[in-house]
Length: 417
Image (spheres, helix red, strand yellow):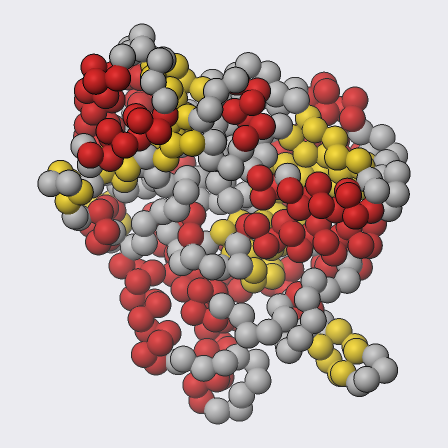
């Protein structure tokens, strides 16, 4: 991605002030040192806009939705559906009924694996994933394949952490019913060529699910341009609340596949003989949903849109470029994952030191990073390592924080090597 030289990579502005001022959790000390939060691929901190939206819901409109005729219920229902409309616009869905609220990316993938699997996957069929996937995009498909006596095929990666497209094409045949791939690797930061993957899969007659959990707040997403059949993401990774996520599905698929769960709101009529299912999107939203989470997710989307997703992408690319260049100056450090196209995650190891030990030392210096296998054990097996130290950047991080991270990394090297 081209970096604009005029951008100040120490901060972006939001409503005329440095954007990090909007995040109260960042303004605290850890072990007597200012917190430097570089664990954004796990979850992001929340801006005042989101915090105030949460408070507003419980103070002004706490009520169940779609069922009450009273004022609070109508107010909450309107806010819930306005959020759905906002999210549909954000990802350029053709219509808002293609947006289903879920608990998060994991539930979205499980929903598609279960419902699409029951509809389309039978004995002798196959599902294709990549070697870069989070466990959430591996295990549900393994469970489906075991249940339907189908086969799970895996696209290999090279030493840079990039998938090998030629090998993907070799896996495509008439048995492949769905291809499920991450847009961005949560461990390596690799940006996968999802547009090409979708085109190849569709030529083969296969549906495609995109896991956009690590992409939706870093990269502009247009589901119509991508032409994906399903796309999933989580609120908590995009400055929103936990426990809420989105499944986008093309209307034709959502109408074809059976519902995921039974209960209230997903029905039109119920008798002891037969149940008639509700229209989209309610067909897939059984029971009382995470109302506050769905409403508050709109505030997170508004926050991103007000800054500008393209501006965020350029800013974070600058942070990643700078951090990568500086880490390459440290001969004791190995970067894991050197794809040409990456989002703002940097996985590394200090040679001769366990990543857990590095993470503990960095924590004592006020640096929050993630260590371990990052729910991607097959990636660790491929690189023959127990895990990595992952520093992942967000809109509120600064060059100065990266400098302090590097200073702390040098101190850790002296202590451990």
